[in-house]
Length: 309
Ligand SMILES: [Ca+2]
Image (tube, rainbow, N blue to C red; front, side):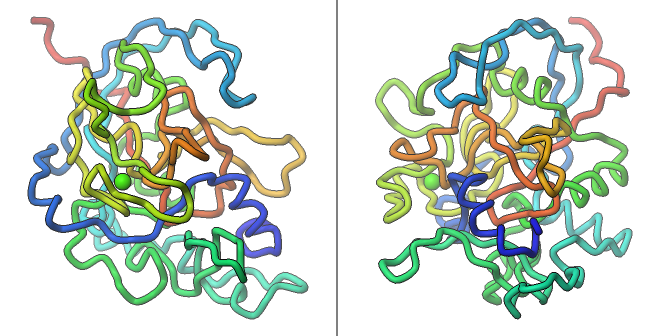
């Protein structure tokens, strides 16, 4: 079932307590410094406490984990970066491919497309819909495209799409421990990503999900990378903006499709519902299904560490 079966809506509701929709807001984008292109930062190895006393059952128990140092993308892979990969290779993402014909599938789900978040209505309470034509060049499948969003994170990429990009770039996806260690950056995890004055310091959802996003952080959709301050390792947007794929598998062993762990939460994570904008938070996501709030960033474990200062 999975990507194209009737389980889609149920799956997405369970998997993606937070989803996507509105494009990034250009006004705020001009304020974003971020880092250029393929900038990577060195994440020095160390030992940390992974997980938390479970706020959600899948987050615990806390345990001590040691990771070796590695280089990591300073920001999520952008539309511009993904476009360069496609131009160089001709790669076709899963969302662009003809889906398998499954018995009983609604006609729309026989066309290439992907899952797109929408605000539920009284008549239709589902958060997710199958959008024919939704793919990385047109994440909502509405023809709006990604013009002017070259520095926004690429979305509508399935796990194998991210892995293909990684192979081309000569890098790798992080595993969950590497990702969580990098996101914590040696700091105490916050219950909500706000500064001392209560101002959001990540792109997440302010307001009562899913009815109305107040956009207090400047964005009601994806933000260009680097619009929020980097963490102590120099990494932007580890929390919020878009979920990020890891190589760690998860979910039920009897799942009909391979399931992976995504990290970091997205612009759809709200205090009243998802609250998964914390390093220890994790979601299980069907690897064959990209959505409009999942992206990725890469690591390089082969590149030598920077010279000691
Ligand atoms: Ca936001």
